[in-house]
Amino acid sequence: YLIVTFSMAVMVLVGVNIIAGRFHGLVYFGHFLPSGCPFALYPLIIPIEFISYVFRVVSLSVRLFANMMAGHTLLAVLAGFGYTMAVGTSTDLFFHHPAPIFVVFVLVFLETAVAIIQSYVFTILTCMYLDEAINLH
Image 1 (cartoon, one colour):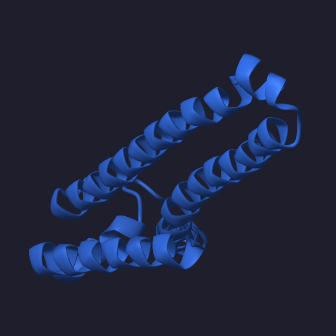
Image 2 (cartoon, one colour):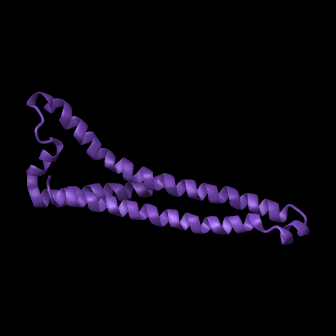
C-alpha cells in the first residue's frame, strides 16, 4: 500500500529534521539557501529548495511503492495465465509443457530480488539524508 511507504518516508523526514535540529539548531535552515546565491534570488530559491526537500518524502514512498506494485501485478497476471494454461487445457499439455508454471516460480525469485534492491535503495537514501543532516555542506 502507498500509505505504508508514505508513512515510512514521513518518519524518515521527521527523524532527519529532529536529528538536524539537535545537531545544528536553526543553522540547519541555511540548508535551503545555497552558498553564493545573490540576495535578489532569495525569495525564489528558498521556496524551491523547501519544495524539493519536502518532495523527498514523495520520491522515497512512490519509488518503493511503484516497484513493489509493478512486480506484484506482473506476478499475479502471469500466475493467473500459468494456472489457466495448466488447468484449462488437457493433461497432456500440463505434463509435457510446464513452462508457464516454471516462469511464475522464476518470477517469484525476481520479485524478491526487486524487493531487496528497493529496500536497499530506501535505506541508502535515508542514510544519505541523515548524513546531510549531521554534516552540513
